[in-house]
Image 1 (cartoon, rainbow, N blue to C red):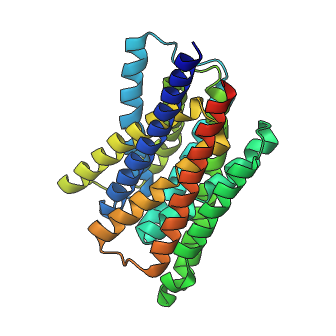
Image 2 (spheres, rainbow, N blue to C red; image 1 turned 60 degrees about the vertical axis):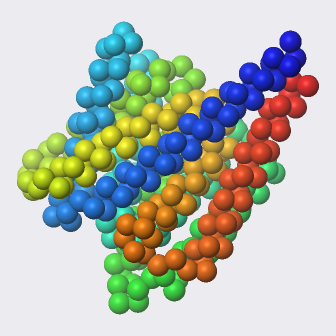
Amino acid sequence: MMKLLKKINHESFSVNISMLLLASFFFSLMTVCVKLVDSKISIYQLVLFRSIFSLFITSIILVNKRIKPWGENKPLLILRGLFGTIALLCIFYAIRNMPLNIATVIQYTYPIFISIFASIFIKEKLTKNILLALILGWLGILVIINANHIDQSNLEINKLSILIAFCGAICTAFAYITVKQLSLKEDIFVIIKYFPLVSLIIMTPIVFFNWQTPGLSDIAWIFGIGIFTQAGQTFLTIGLKNLPAGQASTINYMQVLFASIWGIIIFSEEITLNFIIGASLVLLGTIFSTRKMHKKIYNKIK
C-alpha cells in the first residue's frame, strides 16, 4: 500500500512539474509571435485578439463540460482578470521595445514578488529551499540583464521599458496569487475564462478608436498568440492547482531559457558569457527547487 502511495505521489508530482514546464514553453512561443507582429498593430489589439480567441475556446470547453460559467467568487475572479490584463499589456510592451531575452528575464522577477505576496496574503511559508532557489534565479536574472546589454543610444526608452516590464512582473505575481486561491474551489476553465472576459471588456473601446487592419502574416502571428497563450494558461492553471505558489513559480524560470533560445535563433540576439552564466544559475535554481519539492513530498508518506 505504501509503495502504491509513493508511486501515485511521484507520478502526481511529475505531472504537475510537466504542466508548468509546458506552460513555460508555450508562453515563450507566444512572446515570439508578439515580437513578429507588425509594430503598427497596437498591443491593445493584440490583447483583444488574444482575448477573443481564448474566450471562444474556453466557453466551448465550459459548455461541453456543463460547468456553470460564472463561478462562485466573482469579485476575486474579476480581480484575477484585471491583474492578468494589466500584466499582459506590460509584457507585450516590453517585448515590443526590448530584446526578447531581456524582456523575459525582467518579467521573470515575478517569482520573487509571488513568494513575498504568498507569505503575506495566503500564509504560505517561505522555506529555505525556496529562498535559495529564488536567490539563484534572481542572481541569474541580474547577470543576464547586465547594463552592458542596453544600448546607450536608447537608454531613456529602455528605462521606460524596464519599468513597465517590472510592473508586468508585479501584476503577474498578484494574478498567480488569485489563481492559487481560486483554484481551491473554482473550476480551472472558469478561472481561465475571466482573464479574456475582463480583457475583452477593457480593450474593446480602446481598440475601436485606434483600429489598424492586420496583414495576412500578422493574422498568422495573432492566431499563434491566441493558441500558445491558451495552451500556456491551461497548463499553468493545472500546475498551480496542486503546488504551492512560491514553489511553482520557481519552475517557470524555464521560460527565461526558452525565450533566450528563440531570441538567438529567430531574432539573432547575441549570446554572451553573461547569458551563459545567468542561464546556468536560473536552471540550477529550478533543478534544485524541483528536486527538493519531490523529496519533501516523497518523505511525507514514508
